[in-house]
Length: 265
Image 1 (tube, rainbow, N blue to C red):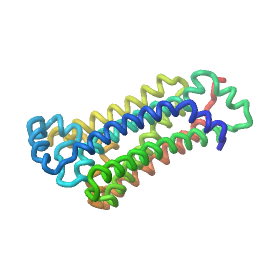
Image 2: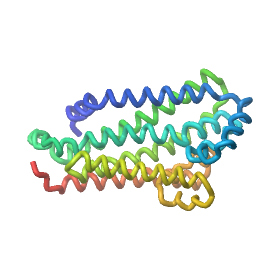
Image 3: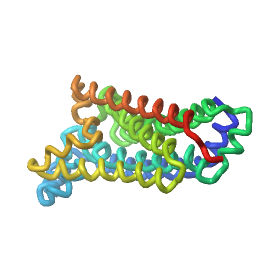
Image 4: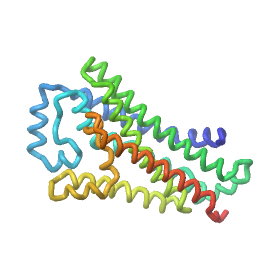
């Protein structure tokens, strides 16, 4: 690992990370503040009036508890999409950006080996993933306790966030894989972004009607089952672990590809 390179990536990306944390803060606090068990019936009536729209975003039921409310209105879409976009943009500013701009030659001219460079950039993206998930988890916990003391089931809430971390480790690994494979930034963004959009659209369509439910088998987002994790489902736990394992495999594959690439420097 190279600490100077790690600091360089932090300086280059910290503004973007702060921007996305601000967006997470805005959405999370507003939605948590909306929680009111007495309004559950009203929210359910709204969902019944536009069932396809609410179903597409995973908001089919307001829930009877604070945890159920947060899962439906935050973990069905917002805390999946916002960190996902952040990881996509950061991954595209790592390996492939250096290659595309021709600055990889200068980086390799330093005492850093290819292995050191790729390990450092993997570490940076993993740290970004950890930060985004830990921040959103801590924010939700603090906001819930401040606004509705004692309402949140903390242990199951943390279990859901562990599953969210596994999901974003996979998504980050996939974005980093494309960053390591391509030599042009636009191609890396195009492939990674295309996959993420496809996963998201398929997930949304599969939730709209029972006729399209089979589509859920075509997207890895299905492996993150927040509601089932909150109920300590062993199947949901295994799916989350599978996501984390797939993420690790993608990071390892990206590192091996980068080490063996014939870079035109």
